[in-house]
Image (tube, rainbow, N blue to C red; front, side):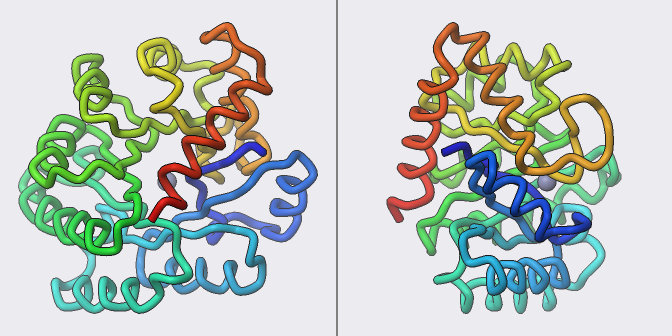
Length: 248
Ligand SMILES: [Zn+2]
């Protein structure tokens, strides 16, 4: 079984076709919510397609659009759905779309989600665009290790830090043409790798939209770089997935 640990089915079109396509290719899907509305849509998808696994969270940019009260109430909502979710996400810090002056607010919000993940003992999927070092430092302060750094584009020394902490790195399908992600595969032991599509984004051939069945492109790249068979990558990453998501 192949696993796409990070996608956004709630913003994809023709969701049932995409789920069918994935099923045909033996791809399991984890889809992540990004705000209160998206979390509810994601729960609807879970209801209609029980084999799809879900994470709920609030994307960093979205946390800045709502009040502290709304964030706290969403955290309560997520907690009340804890039996339906496999993890927390997508959450994190973003300094590409947000100004530096929002950083403290973003950190406060992310901290709430890390505490939630810790309390539920579930993995947390982290977005860290242009705030990679800030993310790693904040996460380290919690001493919580069920962490997936999604689409991580930080410096090599931060990748090394992530590996020292024994966190996971999920490799997007854009790795096909991205030296940055190819380098991450080279550096990381296979025990620290997972794969993702971030559908509908990050298409392996820079098209739009991406879909979960394409996650195989990331697996192929790992097989090529690690010089092992695709079958072996499939087996190892399924073990990684089960260890992280199911041993709750
Ligand atoms: Zn995402």
